[in-house]
Image (cartoon, rainbow, N blue to C red; front, side, top):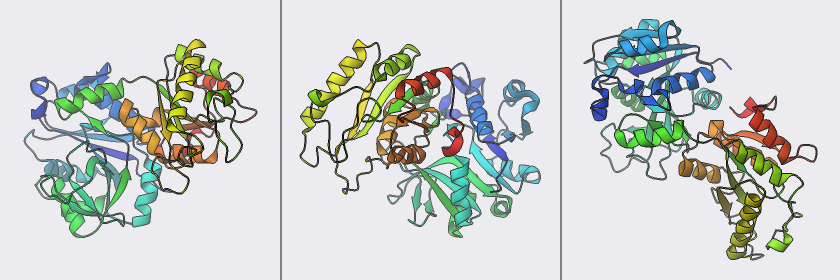
Length: 396
């Protein structure tokens, strides 16, 4: 599948909401985790195969140019120009297809998934939108249920809006014929009116440096603790037969080496979370109280062995209830992402079942699988050493 190689970053604004920090530094160059926010953004884009990155600069351009040097392209225009004017000025240097980004937002791009959806809809542009089910931000987008934006409102004033534009938009150069001197959001509205702005929807939160409130969360996200998420039965303990469940602690049996794997992860500074389907509660085979008791004993044993389990996520619903958290759906993984501000593209999910693999793919996690010849302890050692299976990029 052909793919764009150029990422264009709108980075000319004065960052008024971040004053006084932006009086001497553009917002995208504010330090997060020991380096400029823009460095994190560029690293992520390069990791997704964007080898031509162009900054459209305006306000205090020198700090960006000084930091990145000749590894990046730059177009500098007056600070008071709109984003539409900057993009129009850059048009002669833009490729036939490119990714347009805001300089103050970060979201782990999944270009192959995005491209697949874009090709299917054959639109001039594709906007990445956050589902916003948790009310994380005030919405500015509505969709039509068929994969297209039906309303785009930068003022966020309409009551019919329900999703959020993340600032990662795939565009064909021919879409720029609708550009004006107004902000680039006016271009999006033109594409919506012509029904040629499709959507790529994500449940993964985005982060940024556009406001003091979001800046605090972004520091947690970009400086966060490495995390491994585990399925439970078949990874840590002996998996019951099909249709059976671990109903109490007396029925629990650690798999050989599993506590050692937990200790390995803790000693290397990794946080460990559990994400497990437990439909036995819905079926009346066990109670939520007994599940909680098993969870407490499991965490105690892990601690006694030198490991730790920081949190557990359980889906208690039955097989046919359509719950969004029941694997292979990724709801538990996204809940963990929101609770701990995880970058799921850098988070391992370890399972033992095809449903685990499907959930990992849907969430954008790295994935490895426990098998009789590859126990959890071996996988934990490989994670700590930085070893990855040859197929690890399959879901990227």
